[in-house]
Length: 249
Image 1 (cartoon, rainbow, N blue to C red):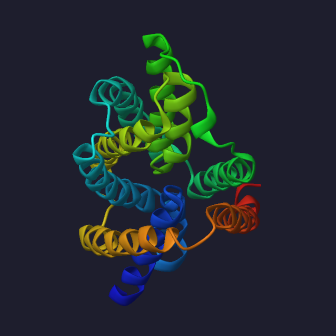
Image 2: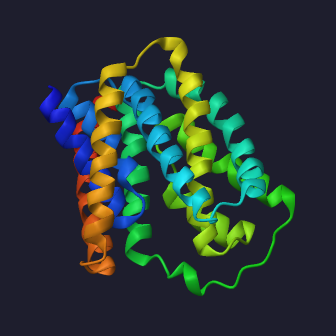
C-alpha cells in the first residue's frame, strides 16, 4: 500500500500547490475508498495530514511577513474550541451519514469554486471581535466534524468578514487550519482510530506534490484549473451520494 499512499499524497499535494487550497477535500474520500479506512478513521487521519502540511505552509508565510498572528489566534482560537468539541459529533454519526454530509460539503465547494469572485478586488475593513470569533467557530465546526482544513471558507471569511487583505488572509488561514486540525485531531484520538504510518507517508508525499504544483501553477491557467477541479469535486460528490444514500434509507 505504500506506493499507492505515496501517489495519493502527492496528488493531493499537487492539487493544493496548483490551486492554493482545496486539496484536503480529496483526502477523506481517498482514505476511505482507496486506502480502505473507515470514515471515522479517515477523518482523524485527514486532520493530521492537513494540519501538518498547513503548519509548514504557515512557517513559509511567516518568513514572508504575510501572516497576522493576532487574527490567527483570535479566529483560530474560536475554531480550535469548536473543532475539538465537534469531534464528538463525528464519532456519533453513522459512517454512511458522515460520507453523505461530506458529499454535500463537496458540492458546496464545487459551486463556490465555479462562482468565486476575485478576492483581491474586495474592499476590506476591520470587523468587530464577535464577528471574528463567530466566523472562526464556524470554520472549526466543519474541521472537527468532517476532517477538512476549511481553507476554502477560511480565506474568504478572513477577507470579507475579518477584513484582512487577501495576501495576508492566505498565510493566516494556513495557521488557522493547522490550529483547527490539531484541536480536531486531539478530539478524535480518544477512539484511537488513526494510522501513524499513513499520516507520515501522506505528509511527505504531499509536500513534494505541493512544491511541484506551485512550480506548475505559473505555467497553467488558474481559472481553467479551478473550474476543472470544481468539476471533479462535483462528480466525486455525486459518486459519494450514489454510494452512501441507499445505506441510510
